[in-house]
Image (cartoon, rainbow, N blue to C red):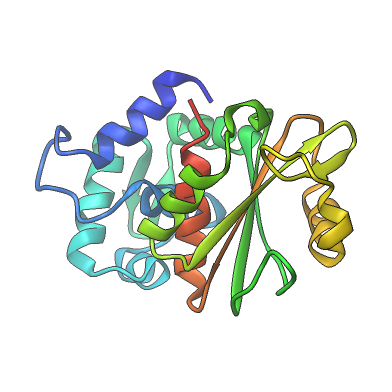
Length: 206
């Protein structure tokens, strides 16, 4: 993801953005864009989907509108041409899915995110786990796709050996390619798992 795009998103969340200090994070904004890309949404429905208050959503919508990423009509919020381009760029770098409980997905709700060509950016996976926990997840595991197999960072141990179910799900649902990174975030709350996965993935985007 181009640095300019990451800077735009972080600026919308940061205190430098116009208006009140944001009570939302990068994962909230990313999920809001995803939901709006799927269909037009009103403020109340968006607040419900994001599990945040209407005041927070009002600020988020205002910043997205001021950045010309969304337009607002009686039908609700929709992506502008610029918003659609940003979303396309984002989606070309990241793929997200829910997965069943397995050796690497230990909670009731588990969300896996694939980040294209970022295996080389991962050191031990600790930074990604910490980001996921801060965002509300119970934990997160990072694996890499190298030499046509899933491996753990640092040790490069074959994931399929000790975690065959997790490996099978990742391969089937995300179809990783060489040098992709995959993060699985787990929580007893679906949104926290999702926010955790997105926060962890964001650490690898530049």
